Each structure stands twice: as C-alpha cells, then as structure tokens.
Length: 288
Image 1: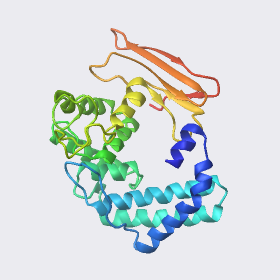
Image 2: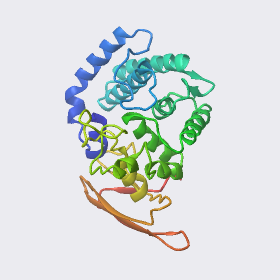
Image 3: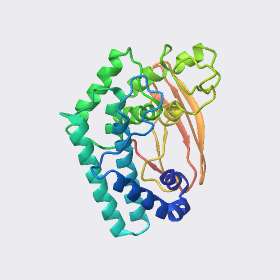
C-alpha cells in the first residue's frame, strides 16, 4: 500500500513513518523462517483449486522483502537495501528449489503459475512454460478461472503484459460459473466475496474480485499508470478493445487533474481515440 501511495500520489510520508515497522516485521519473519520458506497464511482466498498456502506465503514473503529493499533505496539506506536484497534472493532461491521444475510451478494450478509469474520468481526462459501451463489450464476449464482474490488480480496484470487481451476479455465477459457474468445472472448488483452463489455466510458487497474493474480501466478504457511513476507523473494511453466492446469513455482523477479518455471502434477495426491529459503528466508510448 505504501508503494502504491508513492506511485499514484507521490506521498512518501507513510514510507518514512513506517519504515522501521517494516524492517522490524521482516526481521522477525526472517528469524522464524531461516530456510526462506514462509509458514502458511491465508493463501489465495476463495480459489476453487487451492494451492499450498506455504507456497503463496513464500511468494508474498519475497515480494515484501523486495518492497522493503525499494523503500530503503528511496530513503537512502544503502546498507539496509543490500541486506533485504540479499534476503529476497534467499527467498527466491528457496521458492524455486521447492516449487519450480522445468518452468512449471507446483502442481500446475492457475494460482501457482500466476504467483510465480507476477512476483518475478521465474527465470526468463521459464516464463513461457509457466504461461502455457496457465493458459492450458484455463482452456481446460472452459476459459474460466479457478483463482482466488489475489491470483485473479495477477491474471489480468499478466495478460496485459503479455498482450493477451483476448484471453482477459473472454474470461472477464464469460457468462457462466465461475465468473462475474454468473454473479450478474444471479441478480448481483455488487461483487460477491466468493465465486459461488452468495448466501448469508459470505458478503454480497465485497471488493474481493474487484480486480476486474482495474482491468476495465487499464485495458478496456486504456489508462495505465506505469510502475515507476511518482505521483502519476507518467501515463500510458493504450485502449485494448476486446470482442463485444466497441466503445469506452471514462476518466481517472490524479494529483495533477483529471485524465479523460474516450474511444470508438470504426468499421475497419481501427480506433478513434481522444485523450485529455493534464499538465504535469508525461504521456509515454504504448509498450506493445
């Protein structure tokens, strides 16, 4: 969260204030997990096919070590950065030794591939294998996800980076269980906590699977704030329409003002795109 505040608002106050807490916590976890493998935690909540919770915990342990390393660099604490960078490498090596074999992660579940892909736990040559394992698994489930709240978010990010907007769209617009279309077909007016038909045990108004809205803003509408942005000082406008969507219009409020984007698909498949970007934001070219 602190990294996101810096990326989207340029606010480093939280990083400065809570950095000692971050390091104290990470040191405590490192002492409890000397082999680099973290003990089980909540895992990929509400996944239909559940990965080993130790696997997901270790992936997040690595991500947290990397975050603290970045915070240390931002604050000019070079010795701390080196310390937590080394810790991150230890965790990464332990994860790979236990869970990665010839590019395939764990048992081949969707969540397993996505945790490793998203968090950078694979070598470049291994990524295509894990990605194919992921897409083959999705195809075997009739273009449906079996992921929980975390890996679902990772899915949309990985599809964006791999230019697989077609697959992201087919999953997002799928009308059957499991999916958002299933919720709509069962009279949902807000997102559920679970893929299943909600009852009195689960929340019927929950942000758990809200990453689909991030996909709508980033991929369909086309507003992307790059990971290295500081206070939304950079932006990419790159609409990626999928089958069944022929126009979009929306806005995003930044510290510099409101970014407005609209587009419409022409008969020949080209797009007419209009973008209003406030001063103080540099528009970068699309990465595709």
